[in-house]
Length: 211
Ligand SMILES: Nc1nc2c(ncn2[C@@H]2O[C@H](COP(=O)(O)OP(=O)(O)OP(=O)(O)O)[C@@H](O)[C@H]2O)c(=O)[nH]1
Image (cartoon, rainbow, N blue to C red; front, side, top):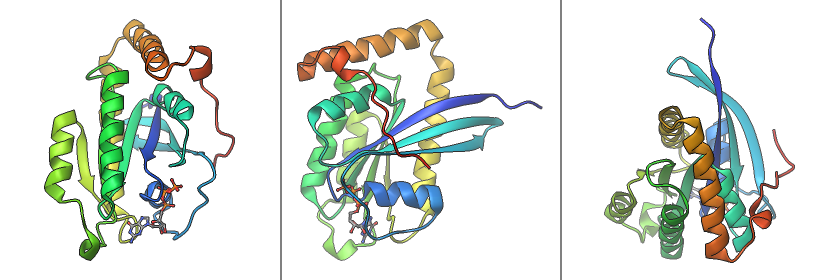
């Protein structure tokens, strides 16, 4: 049987040092590497097969210090979003809440797969964000929620990414093409309005690095 292939673009957002790169690399390679460059965005590409279909997945690991203009581009570029915070850093949790609110304002409701990831679960002794707070936040924004540890295991992150990809693919199939085009146009306009940018400045600029 011939498999159909679709493309899913995932954007990983969150504060600096919340563990975005560790989570992405753990998911893609099953390995944990302690330190990563935080000087720019990284684009990874891989292919996954599930439910009898194959997807070309592009994962954009964003730099936590990204400027607002970059954020607007990222929001427009992505089909699905993983918002990462550290359970040991309340500011990263508050930043995650702001990102979810921004996603809600700039994407058409019900058309975008989003997951909230509370990372560094292995550091229980340093926890400052309760599991219930993550659950409540995800309920408020109607997104998925997982607490994971990139350092400890690859299972939690893999579960979270697969669930995100599955939801994104289902949404793509449900949404007829003309509506998808309309969604992208509207999103670009809304972001431009919120951040005071022209349509031109939020056009996709593809990061150079890929594996
Ligand atoms: N204990 C523990 N440390 C982690 C975990 N995930 C990441 N770290 C550490 O947290 C620090 C930041 O991780 P990064 O993956 O670079 O975080 P980032 O969000 O990509 O950071 P920026 O690139 O600055 O935005 C590094 O020292 C990682 O080793 C985890 O699950 N547990």
